[in-house]
Amino acid sequence: MSDIIRQACAEDAQAIADIAGRMIRDTLITFTTEEKSSEAWLATVLERGARFLVAEAKGQVIGYATYAAFRAGPGYRHTAEHSIQLAPTAQGRGVGRALMARLEDVARADDIRVLVAGVSGANAGAVAFHAAIGFREVGRMPNVGRKWGQWLDLVLMQKDLQNPE
Image (cartoon, rainbow, N blue to C red; front, side, top):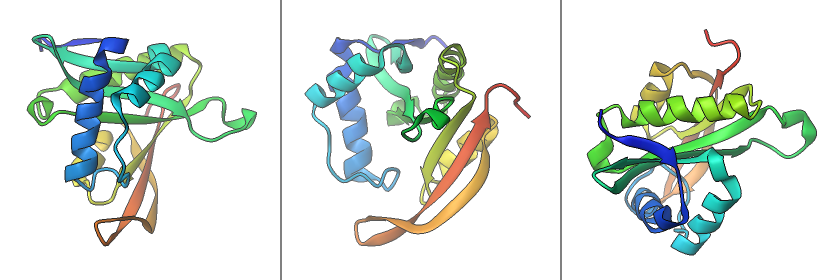
């Protein structure tokens, strides 16, 4: 793979907004219905720093991965929830695996023990992807999301970064 995985920078905000916007507008991958502006993404990139990665091919951002606190409170300090999105042209090429491998390294260095994925039940591909990289399903919350007049399940998956199975 000749793609580059690197820390996101300010110049990536519009490309990130474009990738995320397509997922929001055109899919059930996310329950979110309102797109974030490139300015809002810029603030997120700057806030998360090394915790926000992009994949780049031929000078274009083709995907991103990031993580943030799972829940508030010091007891959850070592658990984070991640997000990963790829442009359609990046799917099936190993870009997602490369992004997640690097994100897991960053998380370990940040003393994160467990990464959590909250996956739309309508996104069987993401469930399979996470299972293939070592996440396991730990719960399913039926009908907690609603988008386009449909009730959607939330599949909870997690990976222990300190003791992978």
